[in-house]
Image (tube, rainbow, N blue to C red; front, side, top):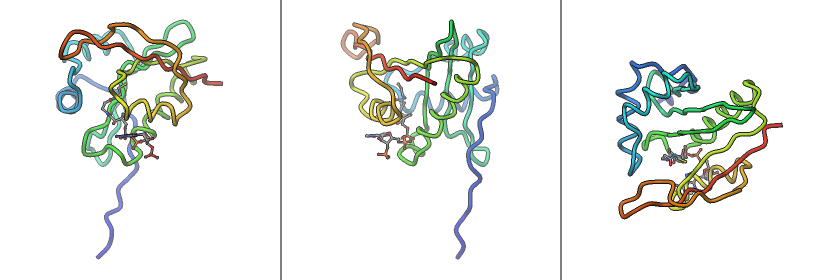
Length: 154
Ligand SMILES: CC(C)(COP(=O)(O)OP(=O)(O)OC[C@H]1O[C@@H](n2cnc3c(N)ncnc32)[C@H](O)[C@@H]1OP(=O)(O)O)[C@@H](O)C(=O)NCCC(=O)NCCS
């Protein structure tokens, strides 16, 4: 029996037509997911919104906002069934490369203190934790802080 060889995932512009699949992943993996309106706002604002598809299947996506030489990674997500197989690291590499090509000197992001998987990904990638934003996120009871991580792109 021969192994099934899959093509590597491809980055593409996120389109309105992708949003049903994007939201299915978003709703499955976050306690406080982005809404349809949040994605539409990002698309309309001209942020760098990308999908990551393998053989047509949506594996993940990211939203990157550029301003004043800094890139802000607003969302980076991998579908549950594709997690822990290197896809998050590969997609983060794509986001950082895009930010660099856009002229950003650094990229920063916020992450929940409870999200140890994401923190491990960012730390292993070379991000440094630089600040805490108090009460940044909604949480089940009240609010949760955000940890701010940054990566120099030179
Ligand atoms: C965080 C997320 C993007 C990681 O994607 P992934 O494809 O599972 O990550 P990878 O397989 O590329 O792992 C890269 C590294 O991240 C770390 N990591 C990823 N998942 C982890 C977990 N569950 N526990 C501990 N470390 C983890 C590891 O250091 C891993 O390297 P290793 O496999 O060599 O040990 C993914 O879990 C996800 O989409 N989570 C839900 C959405 C989310 O939290 N997004 C980030 C918001 S700030």
